[in-house]
Image (cartoon, rainbow, N blue to C red; front, top):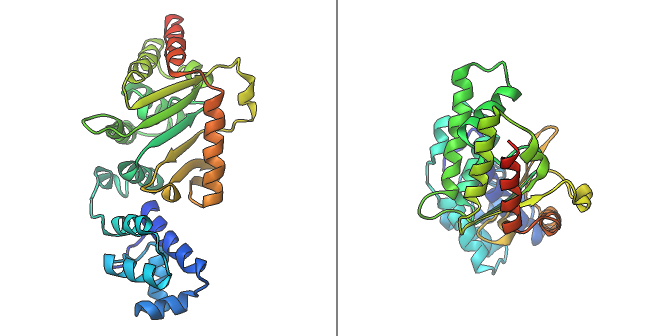
Length: 283
């Protein structure tokens, strides 16, 4: 398969999983390349996601690595053979790659969980909220550039809308529901949008009020995306060097625990919706 200029987060994840399988049986990259009938450079490119890999080669690698997990093998084959050119590709070269990678991961996810501390989760933002937020964060942007970001954010909402929406849970701290973004009128519409969305069967919104002190050590914003198997989950967090895509089992376990801890100190969905309605009455 042809070499890519740059791997997406999902393509890189496939390569990383193949590398982990190889390392689990103590094979070097050079020996694995020989078993596959390629050179070590191509093997390195496959494991970095830069070079694509066929279904036949995924299955041959799994056999060489003595992998008997049929569900994992099928999931890796699906990752290798997916040929969907998603809507996000039209923004390639215009918006930063991590934002497009997140859209791709959203598309293939089996569920999504968010923790939002400062701002309303992107999937629940109204057009006006997103426009005002980008305006505050990047006042130097011309209108047409800002509108591209808003347009992309609106399209991302498709995963929780439509006939087959993605199961979605979000925990929102009161701070995000108090920090007014945009006009008072538009911010009220934003809160009502969250309350309305929370009535959907596939969508759960929980709120952590300021009064709940147990959140103090709970952490910060995060996104948890479900893979075809728990092993293939991904956590996305903002880091000082940029967006971090976290996928090692130890870190995934840590963040699953963190999410449940945060969820455990939040209000239940019904009380959360009532809390949001009370905030709208103050505006």
